Amino acid sequence: MIPYIYLGVFLAYSLLIFAVAWITSRRATNATFFIGNRQSPWFVVAYGMIGASLSGVTFMSVPGAVAKQNFYYMPMVFGFFVGYIVIATVLMPLYYRMNLTSIYSYLEERFGAATYKTGASFFILSRTLGATLRMFLVVSVLHVFILDQFGFPFWLAGLIFILLIILYTLEGGIKTIVWTDTLQTTFMILAVIVSIIIICRELNLSLTQMFSTIYQSQYFDFWDTDPLSSRYFLKQFFSGIVVAIAMTGLDQEMMQKNLSCKNIKNAQKNMFVFSSIIVVVNFLFLVLGAIIMLYLQQRNLMTDELLQDTDKIFPTVAFQNLGLVAGLVFFVGLISSAYPSADGALTSLTTSFCIDILGTDKNNRWDEKRKKKIRYLVHLSFATLFFALILFFNAYKNDAVINLVYAVASYTYGPLLGLFFFGILTKYRVRDRWIPFIAILSPIICFLCDYLGGRYYGFKFGFTLLIVNGLLTFFGCFLARQKRSPNKFEQ
Image (cartoon, rainbow, N blue to C red):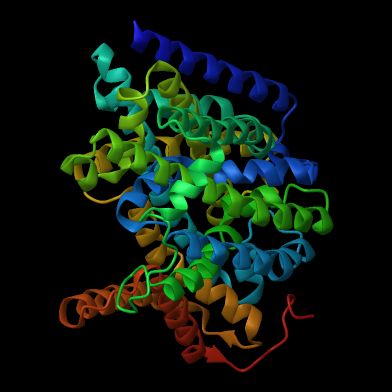
């Protein structure tokens, strides 16, 4: 009976999302899909970006990671805040001044076609891997705790999820996502708050007593003071700044929502509000993780299996220990955190490939109808790729997903970081044809440094690898520099 209840909730939630998609996608054009006709209210974008930024990875992995890492994630969150301010004051004015649809068009104006294609390609690689890792986590939970009860194989669970994402994003694109993300952010935050309240009641703690208990526990430790540790607090803080700039400010998915605002002032308001709220919401996730650990300790439920795969801690407690209501709350929170990361990724990848790789916005020989057909084909192709990668990750997952996502980002977002900031901070041109080789070589050098440092010296870069990667790309651009010559961008 219980699996049928979960299935019913999933279907009801999906129908609600489709209703919003239907309302927002009427009379949609390519401009609607790509930038929402630049009519998105800034406060709606700011609120909805919380769900898109956190995703199902944060919903499960951050609370579970408290078991081994205490509150060591929080210095990174403080770094996020600083990074978002940099985005609002440095990058967003640039994007609006150039009236961009794809942010990677900046690289073409500044350096040339090869650099432009390189930047867009690294985004496509980064977002494809990151999004499918996040989707894999959610599909795994849907399969293990719900669909497997009906005898559904894993591949069918993944296929159902992908088909739902295709159907409600295919027409409205970014305009639909701005509004569905708002709805889903609400459900996700409510799920966290209600989960905390349910566990507090199980432990007979008031909210005041809960904070006092957490404060006195072993988990309330923000600062890893071992410089050799990958979680060293200064590494975390500075990595947070760079991760925010790279994975939000240089990411088409996140910036596409900002570029759908009416003007730069509204977009900056959105980013300032978002940066403040995201700190509070991440802290709530860590509080949830701490109270779950205290619950497991009191009930003597912690097992070696859970410690080995901390992503399973929250769903196991919600589904198996706290009763039906807690399970439903978790389930709604999970799917409401999963949809924003999946729909935004699919839309932004479609946008980037159509504009940056195929150049549909510059091709005057194609009418609106043909461009729309091409967009549909690209959309479906990326969805198929997502499905294939989800199956691949199911076969080879062996690490906490949030660490894996950021590890991937360290290698793939580093070249973007170096390219953009070389363009912003210097006035040099570059030998355009050299850039693809520099962008590939930098991550390879980073991998070797991280591997050799860990093996022979016990030193791990952690998330600071992204900084090193960006600096190597920046230095490579400097070596490939040419004398300054005015171009359209500089005039």
